[in-house]
Length: 356
Image 1 (cartoon, rainbow, N blue to C red):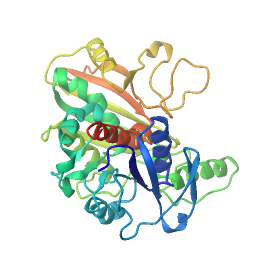
Image 2: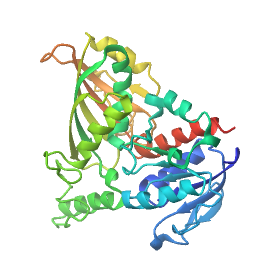
Image 3: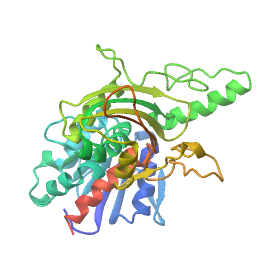
Image 4: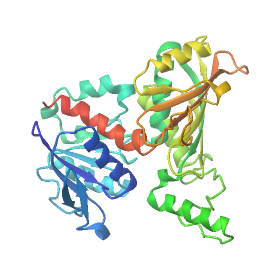
């Protein structure tokens, strides 16, 4: 792999996360010497403006990763299953946001604010890396914000049990899902029905308690991902955790209600201080003044909305009186940024430091 600048590929460049990834690469001055965007056949040849130049979208084909140093994948599981191995075989490092490799025991599932030191050690000898070990997985968007909030609390008081309910925006299902929310909202307000396509039911003015397919145990695939990925990232394979995932009629940012039981006693004030000191977390916790995390709080208020920002916002920090050593939290983050694109780029930045 060349040291600087890098030949960077973005697979899924025209999708919601792909567009966000390109924007953040520019904002954070990532050392890109050459950019190759990939998308589906319908976007082949489409020009993407980036850093003052227009870059034509390519389709995935044999040999397309030759000379690529680092490839960011934000595509379907099927695409990643076929093309990630081809990219690493061509000599590239891959940061993959699909679910394909997340639970592979030989693949790191990375969130820099949580297991950054592990990632740094992993990248110590990048030139010696075998092809399989050049794959780094990015977690589910809901998992990312959850583990960032849990990490400093676990380090101090040790997690015993976690119950999380996620309230996930339509952007988590892609651009077509966001468009469907807009169209259905307009239709509902004008007395016209817009049939659901991206979701199993109408999403406008509605909440859908199903994200992904329902498994034999009654949990959805989304809920299963949150539980399994949280255990892996935190290194707690026996963690008692239960998740419920709900799609809500918002465009951006996911919210999570998190109930935690600890091994050791903890006060709300102690937890608040530990969270505020942790990288990537913004504490907004003065509910008497209406200050708590939200995606889009509107203009002119005291609350900084999570949408379009990098932080994991935590508030409503309070004791749970129903159990010993219990706390409740409310966590909000931009699922396209920290939940996907930014997290991938932060992993890439750790890798780049080992190459320069």
